[in-house]
Image (tube, rainbow, N blue to C red; front, side, top):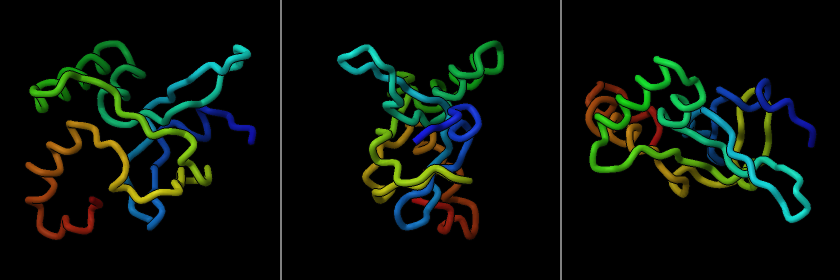
Length: 126
């Protein structure tokens, strides 16, 4: 499969096997095989990954907000292994349910303290 990574992966919605949106692709994590050939290893999600990709003042602000709102956890990126990707199109479709994926700390905090308090937000995902 040939991909133009910046066009076909970055900022796409990630949809689990049952059609629920589980996040957006904020950045891409690469690996290198035994022969030295690079490959896409993970799709990075969450505000920390997006902030690090953007860089500059806006990127530092995103990482700072993520750190401030989830202070008990160190700021880190959350990745979805690329082998779980079933299809790349207008969205990135996964072959597994969303509840088996790692959760970015800030998104968990926002869901618990903000999103779940909005009337009708029960349909907003996990």
